[in-house]
Image 1 (cartoon, rainbow, N blue to C red):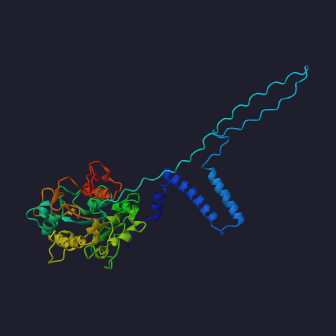
Image 2: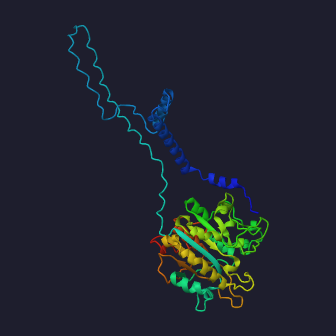
Image 3: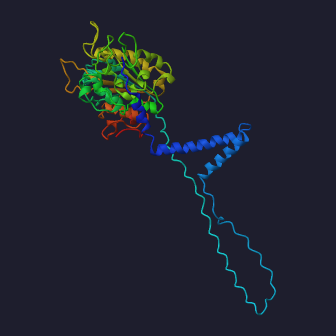
Length: 431
């Protein structure tokens, strides 16, 4: 059963932004719209009665008076006509005094210049779309950097075929070994806390309030689309379902097919839960193939997560099935070719093969399990290259925001967060 959160909280948060500049623009646009509607009505024959037409013209005249000041005196360019000279009068009688001469009329003061109405403030133009318009992010568990990319790699498809086709981020590291802290940081920039590191003792312990926005919220606001695809996501009856998460006071319980909400960061945000964004866009992995068939059906951001088994978590696969890095590598070998063959990827795509958790071999733990590496593939990248800049889940978020010209959320707004977006367009990068 899904959590029903109070919808009015999100509406109030949105309404509170209608102040200052945005409110002034709304008033100005309403006046312009009203005048335009009346003018169109007057120009249409047979649509207004004489009384209605007179009222409409009066409204137009009243609207005009708010943007122009009528002159109160003759303009400087207007010179009054000279008065004709009076005809000579007869000589006055000697005893009569002469009348006093009339004072010369004072020149009229020049009229003030008509006030020029100020144009309403305009919003800045939206940035031009970048070269990357479709991002595919696949998240699996890491066996450690050397076990993934070393000479004795346990993931031959990743370290061999994919590594040679793309760009290897040799210094990509996790924030924590658990999956949820890295997932939360990747989609919102929020830092790990005790509850997310502990795997959420209860679901509500890790829920973010409605004011905490995500990359998904940003994309929707920019009229772009997002989808999260999760393998094995089903309801309690085992049927495919959307946006699956525990009850508020319950802990995460993986489904029989291996789905865990801890691998699905989108279900932890009220901003996505309350008005249905999660139900609409957080879907089972089976839908990915259909959405990849056509460019206009492919989301701008596709976040892809396998089940616990296929992600590479040890001990999560059925008996007799290889688990750990072998299972994760097999999942990549199945899903990645389908992405690379899609029209959206070929047109303007970027594939990020990332590790969202650390699951090293307990018998031979690496010196730093949080150093995991990552691979980028794109038709716009030279194959076989490396990048040694320090990246982390905040960098993933910052880079995607840069690619779509979005403002940084949370920690990625800081000066120490690096972005690899500059690899795709000059001047569009991080710090």
